[in-house]
Image (cartoon, rainbow, N blue to C red; front, top):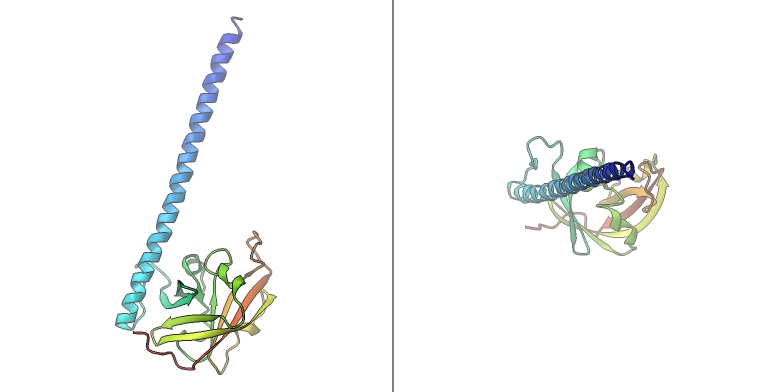
Length: 203
């Protein structure tokens, strides 16, 4: 009995240390998650503000001084908006759909190719149907596109990004949508055609 009492005290003390450590880890993870969420929300506010400034000044502006991307358009569908960022880099895709630099610029004639993550900014592509309308606001004005098709292609397929002599919007994301792996071998592609060749003045 004299030997078991100290062992019980040591065990209780050890359990208290473990519980305290677990609590600290939980607090750290909660705080870290809140920090990342707050950072993402602040970024969206800055990007939105920058886009409004770009519409007024008619020139592209960085949302923060060290950014290597900037908003070049606003994509809208079913009452939701996403700011399109320049260059499909990792940083740009983390904050929204991004414009593939080799394709036509929003507001210009040709194939405008936008890429986005399947689990965030482009998760809505799976619900699009032929005939649905998508709007794209650029510095040149507002343009409406009608969905004409969807296809699944290999990740290395480049023909879907080929330029066109007409105004076309091509939206690309990884496929399948519910796959949790980081490297998807396929892409889901939405094709939409402009209802008019020239954007209308949205301001």
